Image 1: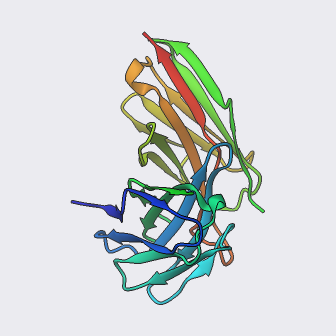
Image 2: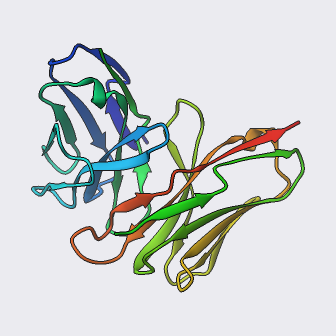
Length: 111
Length: 115
């Protein structure tokens, strides 16, 4: 039972490069989320998808785009990476108001 | 806007001690509250989910309580062990409006249990 799987686990980018973080869940959950975690700031919501075909901005969406490819997959794209986007990124999924399940995270460094 | 606060930010205790971690939130219109554990460099592991209709939930040495009217939750850890050392995060699950179902996190309590 894989749960929530994120790829890659680690990535180093140069300023201005682009990349896509992948997330897949095998629990048939409706809702999926992308968070970033920074020291002293806690976990902040970037984007979420309440159901297949819908996406909405969270607290810190600037510089990111998302795609809910199907019910299982929710990707996060950085079009032009900036040092301020150095962070640990977590994907999560849940069913309605039930508890959430998190992936193991992607550690991204932008130099 | 919902705000979640966890006190203390860090806590160090000797092995065997019972301890309480606190979580407070500003808007009582929540569905549920979830406690997580995060080990260094790792993801979040769910510990307990308290439904809004419940007042407490137990799992092994862990007991979490919820008082929606006062905007508070506590996580009680009995007979602490060095393996309990981690950061503990609480998250409220929003109840209404466009953000229904979203999790809002506190910044966590970093727990260190000394042998």
